[in-house]
Image (cartoon, rainbow, N blue to C red; front, top):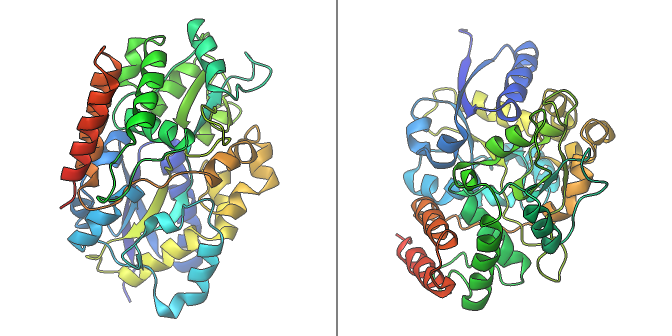
Length: 378
């Protein structure tokens, strides 16, 4: 019997790559199956066609908004196999927030949560005694030149999503309702516009990794970044000169830290894989509670399973990252996932950036977003 070697694609950051390599070494020792990992940039991860990857790789780390498109393209293998019902149920019961159902589309499960995240607040505990909890607190820090905001597409749209949700009227996920409420959508644009005017214009080209690298740099004057996806790596001692702590998103509405745009990643199996069963075996294993609560986080990962989020060691090592952001994750909002959403995500982000860097009426931007969303359904 020939040795099985699987090829996997993940994203290029220690949080996305290191745990895959470490866990794959354990898997090789357990099973004799080798998994070799390549990586792509965060920008590619958020936009690159999954079908193209599926033709070259057995295992693919994906973003949940792709599920409508990949279902239409028939490029991933569903993971809800009757023979694995008990293991499947255990994974479903271990979800944090909507992480597990985010990869379910048209009655099938297309990936398992590998990494759970949502938009939260990042802050420097060496510069503040506690994390700001209100949007107005963030604005005051911005007036002092201490805030960075992720506005590189698609993150400007993610900020818009989170604010609309927190203000009490989340954006629509189907064509039967306007994408954004006229009043709340305009309010969200104005909040982003006000903050964008107070931060470095370079933020228009910054994603979370770029922001964290600046915040973590020795001598950095930046204290806070609101509405940014949590990255546990930066809370670890020694990862950067300055450790970054994380807390629930700052509140603009009246319902606490709810409405944050869900992120994270899932592990999927190519429908074209010549070793599909072996790839599915690995996906079930690496997403399971025992792995996520041990080897996965210990090698730099950010677990997608509740067992990892609740592990005392994981919290002790990360300035309480998981406990401090769990409320925002549990109250997170699930983005649209229909076939056609991914191009909309890019167009909508660019449209928001034009609005927040100009003086145009916010109502016009909302009308355009609603029109773009309706046209995105195929």
